[in-house]
Length: 167
Image (cartoon, rainbow, N blue to C red; front, side, top):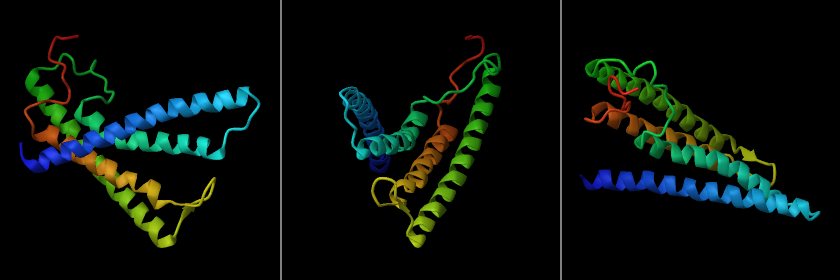
């Protein structure tokens, strides 16, 4: 395996790890918020805001890893009885469509980031935070998903693992 691929894989793993940490943070923040409310207090505004942002980031940063691990949901009932050659071709065609859609979303995300920077957009709910800090996750995440879907197109491994007669 080339050094570039190892570095890339480590980047995807790091994003997945950060997503996992955000999931733990969500659990801690929700429990803390409930406890504070049960004891008659008002949770700080940043606690609620951080959970919103964590949901957003953990979804986008974890998605490329989820693609690589074949963790996305797909319905195999319709394809479970296909002959292996047709299933192989169909699986690669579906990955091509997924890569194309991800490429469009990455491009549109990049346009959004550029627009946020040029217009000086801010999220002004709890604090004044530049919007590009949030929207930068779109082109990064969807760009990495383009790579992951494309890897399946050209690899020996299929994304759809059901072979004829397994179900």
